[in-house]
Each structure stands twice: as structure tokens, then as C-alpha cells.
Image (cartoon, rainbow, N blue to C red; front, side, top):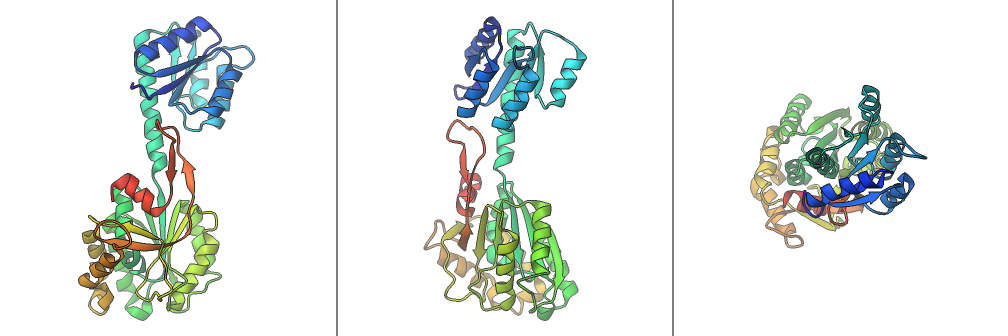
Length: 357
């Protein structure tokens, strides 16, 4: 354990509490001992810890009750329980209440260090998992999402995020619906995205139901933290309708941003520019999957796509960027990391902080 690790030690026996604190201190951790569970809860309400170890038998509040209260204050905090009673009942009850490990008194120095080191590593893994996002990209037609933010979605996947694509029509006006379905599936598979492909009527998508209900159903199922969709500043009626429906259906999603379509108007005003250096080849491969369109849509040609991304880089970093109009963005605390523990759930910061783009 390094000097940034903070462990809360709770035991009404001062000798045991100080013993465990000293062992952890010698192992390199910052350990704080409390002899009263209420005092420990008050401390946990003010300060973040990487792990906690608590006695089971304490006056006024036993260790299992303490564990439940501590979970409310710091969800996901690894907690190890100690007892002098080596009974199966105690162990089963402790683990049932989501304790991460169990030690029987008298606890040996090596056991304390090994058990708490494991607990700290468990906490770090949980925080890493909590930092991942679930991204939902909503498009009116096949290839809308891939053309608008294909590089951004590839970067999200590289960062370990879950990516879901919702395409609301099969684009029958622009090609054979069966072909476009297969192309959409191939593109999603290319980056490991989950695809929801609906069958609303191309050019007649409504901004009300059934569009809102479809998006709400997918939002409920996948619980996204970031949503990308069309801009209202667009000449295509389906794009505008999907924008309006998405704003209603994703009203509880922390971050919502709009990508640029080829039919976007001059009123499209991006405020975020996501660097996609390293992901341009993937974006071009995504677009190549839509073979029925690539030969007839000039805006899907490689040089057009790259020159567009090159242009937007003048406002962002790197060589190539994808622009976004941010509708809403939020921040979330993901736990103590030795710093503030605060990570901003904006598309730009999320990608730059966790995938280096």
C-alpha cells in the first residue's frame, strides 16, 4: 500500500484499533482509528476512504449495522469485518450484508496487511468501473450516427465505455431496407456496439409518439450517461424530429450533445470539439460498411470526411475533430482517488481523460 491509501479502522477496543492502525501504518497506509461507530460514521460523512475494517461486536451499534450505515455514506467502499467469534453464522451474515472480507480475532499482522491490500485493490477496481460511461447514439437513418460521430464512438469504445446505437428507421427512401439493415449490423459489430434498429417510416418520423416512446424504452433498458443525437439546426425533417423526441425521452440523462449531419444548416453552432486522432481509420471503415450509400453520397467519401474533421480541428486539439453542440452536461463524484475524485461527464473531457484522445 502506498502513502495515499486511507483506511478507516473501527473497534471499541482501543488496543485492537490501535494495533490494526499501527500495522497498516507500517505497511504504508494512512489509517485512522475510531473507538465509537457513531464517531466513525460522522468521519465517513466528511472524508473519503479507500477501505474500512470494523469489529462486529460494539456497544450501541454492532458491526453489521455499522456496515449498512457506512454503505449509505460511501457506496462501493470495501469493508472488512472482524470478530472474536469464529462462527459460520457470523461470516454468512457479514457477507450477506455485502462485507468484502472477514477476519477472526486475534488478527495476525500478515493477515491484516494481505486482507486490507486486497480490499483496497477491490475499491480501485470499482472506481475504475464507475468511471466508464454508457453512451447512446441516436440517429434517424442508417449511417447518420456513424457519419456524425463515428470517431467519437470508436474513442469511447477504446476507453472501455459501452456504446449503444439506436437507428429509428431503415432508410428505405435511400436504398433497399434489407441491405441497410445488414450494413448497420456490420458497422455496429466493427466497434463492438449494441444496435437497436427500428422501422419508423423514412421521411415521416414524428417528434412525438411513437418516436418518444421508442427512445424512452431504450433509455430505460440501457441507462445511458451520455446521449448523442441530431441537431435542431438541420434541413432534414427526420433529423429535426429525432432531435425534439430525444430531448423529451432523455430528459434525465446527465449529458446530451448533438452531432453534425451533412444536412446541418449554418446555424449549427458546436461548442465542443472531440479529437479523433487515431480513430479516423475506424470511422472510415464504419462508413465503408454502408456500401449501398458510399458510391452515391459524396459526403461519405474519405477525402470529404477527413477534410471536414480537419476543418473542425482549428477549434479543438489534434489533427482531426468531430464537433458537438452541448445541450446539457453534468458532473459526478466517482469516489476517492487520492485527489478530488471528481470526473466531468462531458464528451471532450471524458475522452481526453480516459483514452488520451
